[in-house]
Length: 223
Image 1 (cartoon, rainbow, N blue to C red):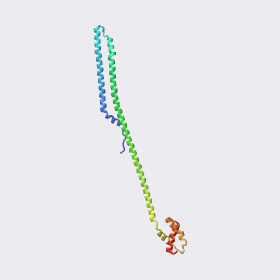
Image 2 (cartoon, helix red, strand yellow):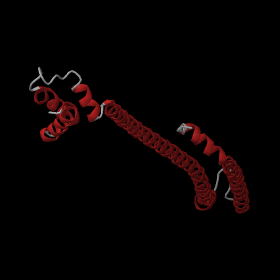
Image 3 (cartoon, helix red, strand yellow):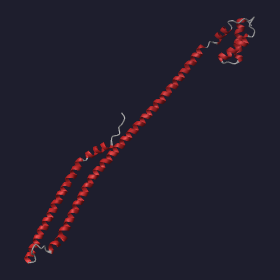
Image 4 (cartoon, one colour):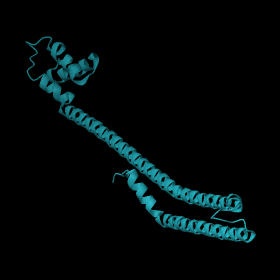
């Protein structure tokens, strides 16, 4: 059966699906990180509010707090404590999100790489199959040519054998050749008709053909 090259997007979906459990864990970690970050930011805000209350109480005790005025100590706390802690927390959250999203991207990259590798394997399997088919076709054609050549040779041999079997023996040929021979009226017949015919029929030299013809003529016609 001819190998099939699978669709790349289908392969990506297939391999990507195998990473769904890991992807779900990453999503849970992201959700947990967001929830933890929100809780820690709320904690920082609550700590800031508590610190502001303490600062206001201290200012009131000292008689420097009046008409909603926020003492400089609150601004110092915000700049020196709250904002640095908030920035540190946000950096930690961002780093955690980046790490988790990187792991998720790695899963997607691995799925795509695996899909490409699988498709390349399909292409190689198809190429190997095509080469095998071409080799089989070549071998079949060579075998056909060999059979045709052998058949032609066999036919040639049969024709040659048939032709050889249809040629009479020299004795039979001489009987037929001299059947109408009349020594009185057919002077030169042997040299003009029989000897050339013997040479052509049996592919023999003139001397051999003459020996056969004269031997037969002497035996049957005493001359």
